[in-house]
Length: 349
Image: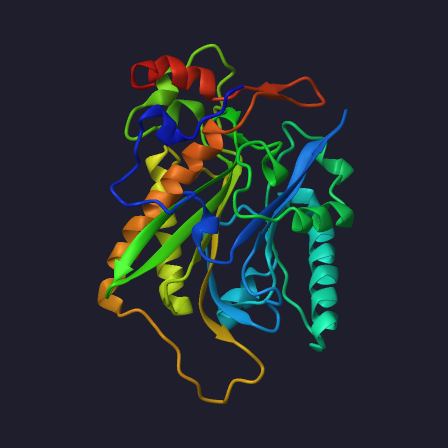
């Protein structure tokens, strides 16, 4: 299938300017890697978001999380919110593989620390999940440490979207969901900053789905609709904008705007979780007890709110657009949005 992102259909979300790739990796130094698992029993995988520099444990970044609806099994968010820093890459996978991926993140980070002589006594890996049990025999726990390592090996700037990595078995608005991303540029005091978002989209009811305000879900026929919002969505935000952890949490809250603009009403069974980091300030063991950091003036934060909401909305739509139809091991099929988009927006193509 010839896959196109949402802008290729003439649908422009918001008014902000995307970065060169319109992905989270437009934030300098950020990389994303996938490992996808497809067998007779499994449609699943793992995705890693790798911030700069290589040893994040030694060079901690400002971080925060926001849980909109807590039907989720994420690891590491308690310490992120207590200390306001990130000290490992972020991994995404399915619900029952969180522990195994956590172990792999520990091994990966310990290896990196040993290479540069950084001692490790405690470690806070961040792993987030969505449930891909509709298209994957999830109790197999098919994601191994080797899959996580391969995801790191494949980390790059221009990464794939759709039903790849952690997104392979995900379902969004009753259609095939998965990984999507978007970015926006923001200029303050003559300097340009980037906000990028990556989503693992596994949420929503078909009839509620919106595309740029249009009730597309009501126009889609011929599929078995999702009647309950019983999935989840993980949204990861990266930026080089100098934000405190408190400010970053405020920005993360605005990702919920993009989620709602695509039609979610944050159902009972949907875990809606956001985590983000800023690369602007790096905290090392050599820092003095009192150190200076750059922080955005509070009155200037509204533009970041706006761009974060746009990124979220467009990233979710890109996840839908870039996914192929997938049939799981039990014979259940979740169809791609693409054929419906072609019919509904063919005059724009």
